[in-house]
Length: 334
Ligand code: AHG
Ligand code: MN
Ligand code: MN
Ligand code: MN
Image 1 (cartoon, protein in one colour):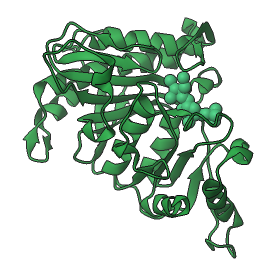
Image 2 (image 1 turned 90 degrees about the vertical axis):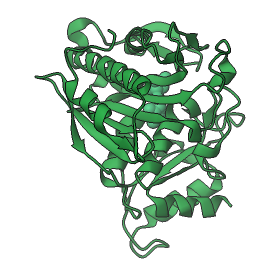
Image 3 (image 1 turned 180 degrees about the horizontal axis):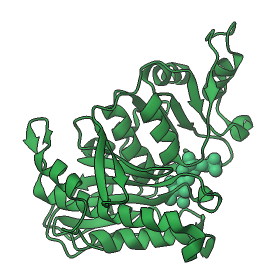
């Protein structure tokens, strides 16, 4: 499905009128974001039907990440490519599910990166999943598309966001001037603005990490979590709560909604890999959102947004959310 004129009017109007640091959103970027939003709307309708349309289960194929693909990983990837490839403003796209980028017909210089379906392990159990996207600008618009065109730090992102398919379908979006959220009205097929100036509280009492990996963590992360677990009377002298949904989109949505921190840190299971999550499709767009909401995002040593990628499918250790907690983690890593 390409950018439609029959629905999503509210979102289109938002992009036409919003000011980003005093400037209008370039029309090419509007075109691309509307195409992404329209596709996620279609995906939301499909996700909601699950088994009724044969959407669940494994595709029986593998991806470049070394993961078994679920049917929905493949369907979401195909839908997104189909949905945006007609955008005149787009030069190329890259996805978690594809080894190489795809050049498109467009004459523009935008590059789209996406995790088409985040939270694959939750598809079959009817728990929130999502789509994550990041938009870059090709540095040399005239040259033929190459993989290296995508290898820009997160600071180069001109837009990023996610759509969470949960009890509601909600999109979080940043254009580099704060974070806004839209919820899908399924009756009118509109993404409706529900929140502006999303802010992550600097302090929190909630952390998010897969505790089953505890024995594999590096010392600074162990120390941090141990101190959270010690509760009142311990080093932090407060009781922490823990949540782990195992869909980054849903966990980060909670952080943007009520604060907290989310971690998928380096662990020693695969010492040569810096982490599980992907820099280009997951860490960078989420870090852009989190920074724009007043939070912070680090790999322990550096802000994620400052990392210079060397590989399209590069992995990274991720700790993001409430600023005070991320600063504490950075001190522990120093
Ligand atoms: P994806 O489904 O796109 O491959 O990403 C899954 C990621 C992320 O969403 C989540 O935070 C993490 O994997 C969960 O990992 P564990 O199953 O190891 O907890
Ligand atoms: Mn995957
Ligand atoms: Mn993912
Ligand atoms: Mn995915």
